Image 1 (cartoon, rainbow, N blue to C red):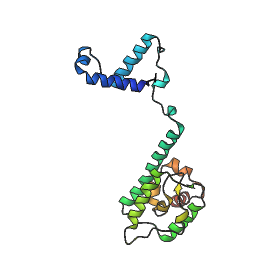
Image 2: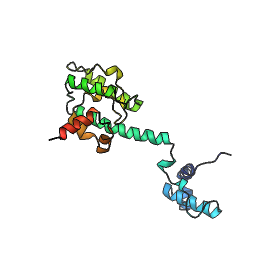
Image 3: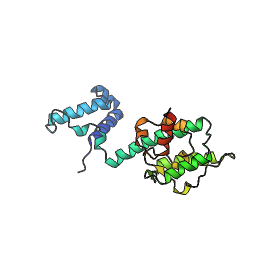
Length: 198
């Protein structure tokens, strides 16, 4: 016999009560999941199968998720923050930095150990943004390093796009804890430091 989880049991009870409103009303049965959880725990305790305090496995916890799921969620969250940099840049007109600066930045990224293959949720949107920008007749966003540029393992941005982004947008939208993770040789860290130097 397959075991049914606690949340699945709560959901099944809720659906049953919603499907039988007359009976639920007659017996004053709640359809609120939090109330059903309390009732189910009390029922199990009355049967003697649960201790008086609910076990921790009834409580949702990120530590109960597989580590790869937790890591992917953190990556997606960080990728969203990196995307905010690019979106800020685009909504302000999308004017790229000079070709020479983008070339220099790209050359720095190529030799950086943080230049890694990106996940689909970081690479696909950035590639779409880059191709959209390149559709403008006045822009050619290509550096000699493009073939070797991947995704930044720190900010999760696509390096082929990020090297064109003005430092004002990067500095404004990059959280201090992410900025601290860039290697000392990173162009983002170097340019940011030179902007704040007297």
